[in-house]
Length: 407
Image 1 (tube, rainbow, N blue to C red):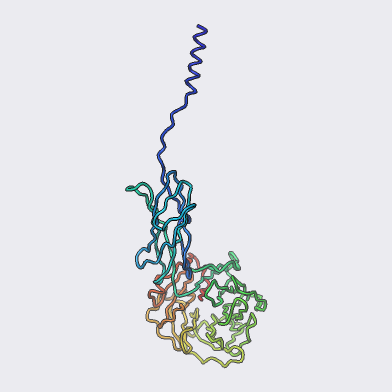
Image 2 (image 1 turned 90 degrees about the horizontal axis):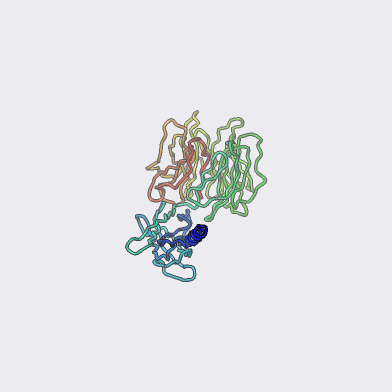
């Protein structure tokens, strides 16, 4: 009996050490694109790389087909290069863990935002899997359009970021934004209510800005000759005073209402010889720069005793001086040689909503562009294929939008 028990235990031990059968694992098919979408901001063209990795266990054969969703074919495949081999843009084979890059290009031939996709087809023949990588490209009649919030944040509207600037979270002290004219990522200045002029991006630092010591600064504008090396400009205070900085020449003429904060905005002529101050009732007050003669008087929409005027924009494409003013309800009022606005955009009667107006740089007449409301919303006026649909913009459920700048 003792010997039998030993033998039985030995047989059981042998049986326990027998190898388990190996299960048959089906091959898995998986491609992973990176990034998961491509975006071309305003002014960006050319190609971007889309990396495609075989994250499965089977060798993959696939195709990559880019295309525009509606409209013209504005997205295209430049080439595809796989690790250790080369293949054309419409077919490649990847071993497990291998990756390749597809260069996807964008050549806009229509205005506004364009949507497309790269369609990846892979897996067993007859039962392919599909991955769609979204493509977005923007094409507008401006190089840069930026929204300033009341805390100092600068928000690009479908264009390249400016870079870090001043920021005062919780303190609504930012008043205005002005851009250095350029066709690349521009520099800019943010004005705070105390008169501080803060450079952003490639704008040079300045030290001769006014220091008021109390909240009185309302607007800032650069001379048309401003560059990343020298950026002369002017700060407007609420009493109408015009203060040069960055080596700008002194001004003469212009209004002044000491103790009465009625000045709203500043505009400089495209030739840099002078400009106008807009008061809250809608009046335009000329001033000259340096030794230049005074600009001509300009009749404009006027509401005596009512603080309704909010912004002014000089139209640089007119042969003689003209532009538009904006009232608090969204009304657009041409002055000088500016043509009437046939389709003025939004209107909020008896609501203090409109904050800024900007003309795009296409140069069409009548002028077209955007109105910004106090929540950040952008609204096209005289809309056509260039200004409609509007670019993506920041929007707050609070009165945070302070200014809108374009170049």
